[in-house]
Amino acid sequence: VAVGHARSATTGAALRNSKRHGVAHHCEVCSARHQVPARAASSSSSLASTGDNHADGKDANGPAPIVRLNSVRLAYPSLHVPPADIISRPSSPMSLSVYPPSAELGGGHAVLGRNGSGKSLLHLALAHGTSVAGPEHSHLQSGTMDMFPDDPNATTFKSRYPISSVSFNSHYRLLQAGGTGYAALTPLGGRLSKAAEFLVVRFGLFPLLGRDVSTLSTGEIRKVLLVRALATRPSLLLLDNAFDGLDVPSRQSLSDLVSKMLRGFKTDILVQGVDARNAARTQVIMSTHRSEEIVKEIGTISYLGREDSENGNGNGIVTEHRAGRSTDMIMRAVHQHESSESSIGTDEEAERDVVPSLWNAARKGSSEGASMSSHNQGIDRNSWGSAVSGAWDDSDLPSLDAIRSIFQHMPQQSAPVPSSHPPVRAEQLRVVKDEHTILDILTWTVAQGDRWLIAGGNGAGKSTLSRLLARKSSVEDGSLSLSFDESDIGWVSTELHMQLALSNFSTRDVLVGSSDPTALKLQIGEQVASWLNIDPVLLSRPFSCLSQGEQKMVLIVRAIAAQPRLLIVDEPMQGLDSHNRRKVLGLIELICRATDMSLVYITHHMEELLPCITHVMHLREGRDVYQGALAAYEPESIVS
Image (cartoon, rainbow, N blue to C red; front, top):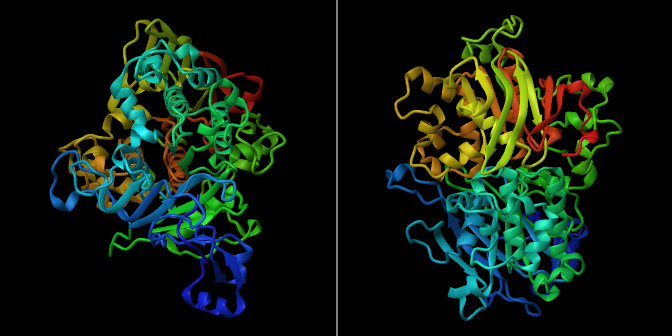
């Protein structure tokens, strides 16, 4: 992958000085030699994103780009016709060329940025293949976007050059299409390909093939999408937060597969019917907010800056060779590029802007920078107290008194509620759908003020449980009782997000849960939104015109602003950058300190465990294999 000319990230003055003090640097794009500062030559090269400097788009001695963007502005198309002042704001201009993988430059291109910077927009535009600005529902507002521009039959590139995408949008479309898991993997009918068969085994999907996709968990649907995408042997694979919803083993499997794809599948899938020559031509463009998801084979990094809300100026796009930098340094630069284009620095200088990992701090034999799989180790109970002390403190978040003023109807934590009527009580609960048992003989009680972590692998029944609680659904086998109304429950989940993502509601209506809210309800909603630094301008826009991360932040505000007695957050951090993850988790922790609100928290990321968590229920195949105090929880002894 290569983008534009190699140039230093320093200022113009520094570039002029480099003619005297710099060194000759070989440009991997045009094979020419340029003078760059010695400091830049010794670290990574920053690749200009202000346009393609080669008129024909080709390297003098190399391949043509497979994607070329020239001054492109993207925006979410409105699904209805709103007033002109509330349409989606176009992204900053993007000029970018993406080349096929090569032995010289490596493969894989990561597109990074804060929520709202335009990452998902870029993925959607590439997936849809829109090349001309203007048509209805086009994401392309201005500029030009060429897909496989050297192909004389470029208008039919999707058949000649397959593009596969795994994203929130493809997840939504799979649910809309319906059908079984098998049908999703064979859209043209017939049998599974050899590659698909291998991947079905690799991700453990065989038991899911006959089930309707509506019965699958979020993580299981992501696995179906991944198998479908990888099995097509695409020329371009788009991964937009593709790891979201996956449990630890599945994230590790995906990471391994992406690495092997970028290396050309010289082993493993080769013997399962995938031609190495076909696999080697696949280019991967991925977006993520988590450093551990950036595999070492990713060779090029693009940073997107968000549009300035006042004057319309943005940071555009800055692209650099990875040059051996650690993933922690790469993610740190996401925040740096929000305000400047200064150089990245060294590993020792990297200040990690990530959420505090209490699990890592208290884990037995813990070490910083541990792998995905190591997050399943147990807690050293002697270190837990020191680990939680002061965690999630943030001077920008509200005081406990400010939170209590919002939750006035709830007793403070210092005045516990009698346990005679617990918020949640399940007795011998059993849920079966399409002859598949999702929850099996579950007995569970949540007392007022309890804070539960619900753990377990994909398909264990966690999201089904959260839906039953949030909807106060009736059950046919066993019993489930809640001691308050549905209006006293706040719920954040992928399912709810899918229901509202493409709705015609305004963002303000979604936030308050009504098109005709009371003045007090609107005031509380806007107050909570301000705690999480949500731009008030977003509230006037159609909800469908917000990015995935912006939508998730609004849904989190909606759940908290309901002043719930029970807050259910099912994988709430999906799609959020590290800054927003820290804000949201910090606010939830403060609410639990300030009030007697009960909490049900579902996550596959134990590094985001909250200090307020008191209990754990670990589900496996619908059964609770552990239920009790956090201090006694030993996940390493449980096979998910």
